[in-house]
Length: 488
Image 1 (cartoon, rainbow, N blue to C red):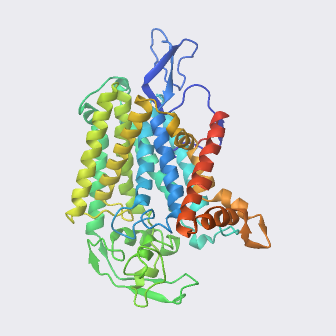
Image 2: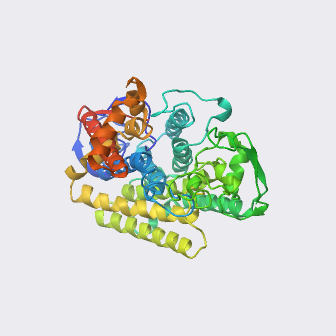
Image 3: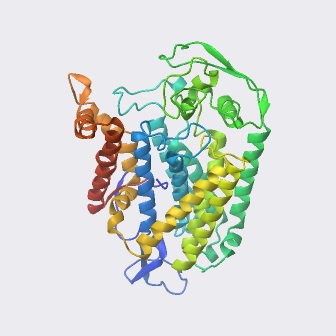
């Protein structure tokens, strides 16, 4: 999920996500290969093949596994699913973790492409592929895994989504990296805050993005708005409901500037129709579980909201820029101790800053709005988690305990499409007996997990852990053994 590409490929030798400090000599290479070769005008040096940063694969695999867990068991376990509005549950770490990983991979993948034009073309192509898959899987065309139909009315296609947000962040930050990097310093060792100075222009762009986001969120006037209820199961189906706002600077569900911009630019029909706020305490007595709406629930409970919308995606770019800094540390610093020191200090600082903003009631943690406190907490958590994986996997060489996550991370796009997006289960559900509820997937879930444990909640959780996450980790392991990877 780091902006990699469509198509199955075999990998021979070096890969893009390399640790520059892990190399062994080999004089058989050609000058200019995109695998870690340093070009010298006088004499071509020995070819240096670099090992993959295993901890980054493990972290990516963990994030994909969390996404599968959230999609499969979040409905039964609210602490796993997204927070209805303010707050931060397990699911709310998935998107920023992906963006952080994308950012960290950018300096590694672009480090050995000296031609800026070629690098930009590569970035644009990958962005288009991510957009294609995002709209196909989350735009409404695919109804997997439970609905066996397919297709979407173009008047209601959802333009935004997970892969679309990743595509935007990848495009902006990768182009920024290409434009601002200085080829003369790419292989110089750095220490302390010299890396910040080296890429000072990137942090200026990050500050500009933050200022624009905060100015719009707190400065735009949000008027009253109305919408037509489109849920056929809702007793208000077809009715036009009005939401009263007439305010500015609010971060409440109905009257925030993030939703206002999406309604004006995207159109309310092109937004997500089952937002997490449906589980808000103002909407249902079953909160934080999803349940029937209260009879006196406010009108906005029935309205769409885009959690991967335009303004929130702008601030999401900051998660990727922070990830890029971690990638710069990996590229420029040669000592494990120096790397861990830089990463951990920044991670802890961001975590403390974000929690302080939230608990002081200055800026709440909110994934739907992608607030600044949310950026800090999730990026800080990502940095700390990566530090742990780096220490365990790349320093202590504890590869075997994390092998399933590593395999998943090396084939993240495949596992995401097949498991998280439900394409494989949708394929299996297409082969049913007598009725669409009598399929292999339903039978395994009911008889092997739910009935054995006499609990729907526990059974579904174990089904997701073993029949989805572990199963696809093993499939990814077999593909890794065959050296087959789905790249973007």
